Length: 130
Image (spheres, rainbow, N blue to C red):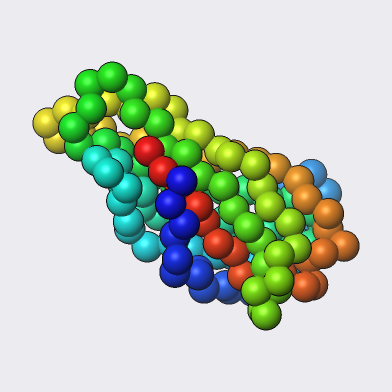
């Protein structure tokens, strides 16, 4: 696993909970394009909501593999002072194969976390490999 050393930026925004249609405050973290080996990630987005729900999404692909590469990533959620609040276990992409042009795989994972830690969230670090 390689650490994505650039900490993402955050955007405070209000979201709508589809279950109850009530406003839920959320923080959104975004990552620019980057790669590991012959794999790539773009459009990385992690949304953490005050109600303790989260969602990770991105697009990944591989340039030179016919045998099902997998993008692996996990996250450390930290305070503004970089103290670790919690981590999320590894998320894996679908099996990826190359092509001409290589197919892009859009995927994501929903998860929960301790919503009592929401106000302390100041950043997220992504660790990834392929």
